Amino acid sequence: MKRGITLSIALVLSIVLVSLMSSDSTANAARPQYVADTGMIPLAANQLLRITVAPEAGLVVPTGSVVFTIDGNTYAPGTCNGGVCKHFISSQTTSDPITLAPGEAVSVDSAPGHTAQFRLRFGSELPNVQVNALIIDTTTGAVAGYTGVRIALADNSVR
Image 1 (cartoon, rainbow, N blue to C red):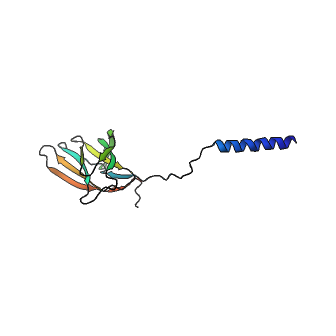
Image 2 (cartoon, one colour):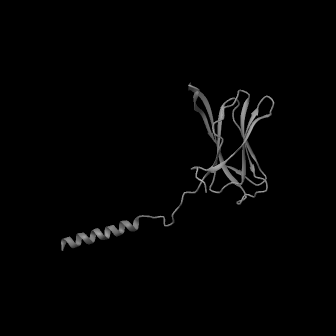
Image 3 (cartoon, rainbow, N blue to C red):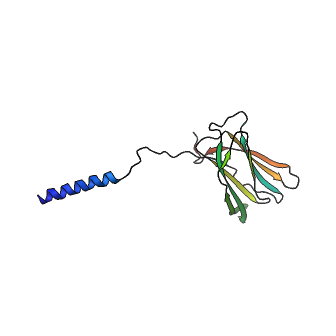
């Protein structure tokens, strides 16, 4: 009899504990994040790296705006051995979220004369924007180099 009461109490306590546990009944899949990354770009003393973000011609942003952040890294030279040089991050910045509405564009410049990298992080929706990286000669204002920056999933997978 004592064994039956103990078993009943254990069963009731188990049911009570399970009912007190909360569970999210919907599965929350990780939302993809899109990234545009310039990689590390060495600059001469009179150069800066400028990133521009603008809507692609003829494309409409599905939600009416694009939200993203910009991470900026500045690198300092380290040691070189056999033509291979190490660099280390000397400063990092992250912007507050930037909202780019239709008809708007954004540009951001690195500090002149440093090795720089920019990484733009977009949300879960593939942005209809063009991201460009320009090397600007600070003495003349001329573009010394230019490339479009590919936007990919943060984990480098392709949809």
